[in-house]
Amino acid sequence: MSLLLLFFYIVLGIASTRLFTRLILSTSYRFRHVPIPDQYPPISIIVPAYNEEVTIQKCLDTLLQLDYPQYDIIVVDDGSTDQTLDLVQSYANPKVKIISQPNQGKAHALNTGIKHVENEFIVTVDADTTLHKDALQHIAKRFSTDLQLGAIAGNVKVDPEPGLLNALQAAEYTLGINLIRKTQSMLGCVMIVPGPIAALRKVAIEQAGYFSEDTFAEDFDITMQILKKGYKIQYEDHALAYTDAPKNLEDLLKQRRRWYRGMIQVLMQHRDMFLRPRYGMAGIIGVPSLWFTIVETILNAALVLLTVFTTFLLNQPVIAFTSLLLYMGLEIAIGAYTLSLDPVREVRDYATLPLLSFYNLFLDGIRLMTFSEEMVNIRMVWEKPQR
Image (tube, rainbow, N blue to C red; front, side):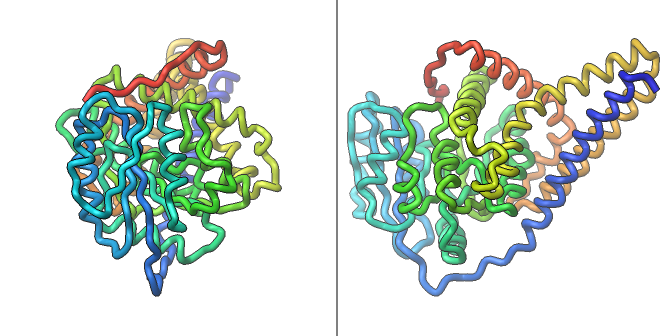
């Protein structure tokens, strides 16, 4: 067997092992038991908002309809220049509190809101996001079971709209982002509590030093800081949040560049956690697995290139394409199964499964570009998507 063919099988084996590992852990997640608490604690919801006149009313309308006994909403207007503040002020509801500040960024807005909170538990919600009416109940159940639980990542869904790009992102959230959080949750080390729905224990945020204003991924950074303080972080798939997704390739590119560069920045800032047992599962498995996602991008590209090389250089197209098709078939089968485990199943998610591999290759290209930009320190600014 030639060295090239051997390398092809090694890369294929690594990719398949990754799929099966995620499958086993995410399947285990469904058998967890979360008891109903004797009493639901009060919760404060913080909504940072900057020029969100298109989405802020829809967000607040759903927050005011939540099925939960005690909660309040703090909207922090971060120096909006549109009608955001006026629209929020039109809500004559005692549950809604408004803080207005000069534009200082999302992380600063979140910290401002946190410092005005008296309750033990906080949920941060992006201004372009809506929550399911039962979301807070499921979050409270989780917190009541474990005093060492510092944060909870909710189940972020794409707000459904017509179009292939929207459907692909919806499937990606369920099969990629949320599936990974399920596997991490079984180890108590979810690595990112997402901006659209992040539930946090206030004392854990204070011990972690609040949200950092020096990164494009403030949600990732606060997660790492909380894990460093010895808290566990889990995922709750019944705490549903629907977020506004990029509507064109340009906005998707901007969003993912911000995500991926922020991820690299935070991993570099917390490189002292890598393979360090003192940080528990987060150090031994969580951080290394995130570094692997960067290497994984190269492996995915290598798998495609090796298929081409095996076909043309070794003249074995049957072996190459049969192996690749079997892997893609395995990916689709596992994808269909994991979709069935999600509390919200959409027919269109199943329909987009055959296209997801090609979409992921496109995202891998963005990751590689972003990694190169970060290595040469190309300047990037925060850009809002078109509404």
